Length: 264
Ligand code: 7PJ
Image (tube, rainbow, N blue to C red; front, top):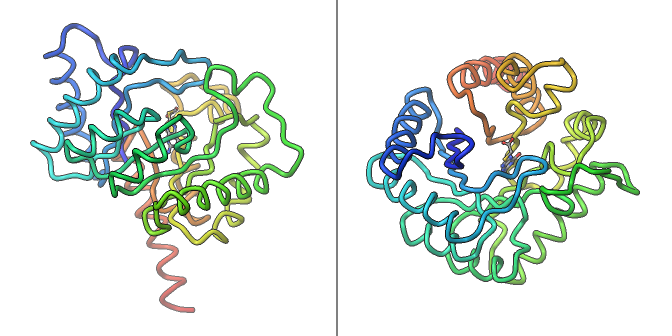
């Protein structure tokens, strides 16, 4: 899964046409490099980021989704928590809803259910603005994540979203300390008990920055190491900025895992 941010801090906001053109070029690159899914996000959910009014999110995301569906043969995922956006992007041909808030905004559960699209449920506590202040769990982090996701799965099923439509994400970097993130990666097998596909996003995140002392632009080697470990630990979809090197790292990992499958 290649990341396509359409927030002003990720692209020059110099007019509508420029933004759409930049998104087109970036999507083309992600797909040429081997992405199967493009994840479009119009709201920055980085720690401390401000929320975006619905109208702004709509004008950023909708034209890009329409363009991607029209011009590319790829699954378009939309990173949104807003029920209105879910309904509109589904009508525009999006193929997946990726909600870091796990359909907890009022109306989001019903809106997502009505789309018939696959939905990624991610673990987070609180809101991006405040989640990193002092993340604390009374249980081991992997237990907290599994319990949360289990209850979200049940909630979705009650609302008519069948299990077959669900993808789970441990939510690396969301309301988690570095220790939480490292432990959660080591304990990803706890999530396999839920028997649903796992999506994992660690690309360029602060867990790399803090561990290695690297700025955002210097986190590729660390991110590749994490992508490899995520695949080894059962990750199915790896959400990244740098698709070409990640595809090589993942394919290399798979060749080794495949040998074991073939000869066991
Ligand atoms: C994630 C995401 C993630 C899913 C972001 C960033 C922050 N969606 N959206 N999982 N992260 N499913 O990329 O640094 O980890 S935005």
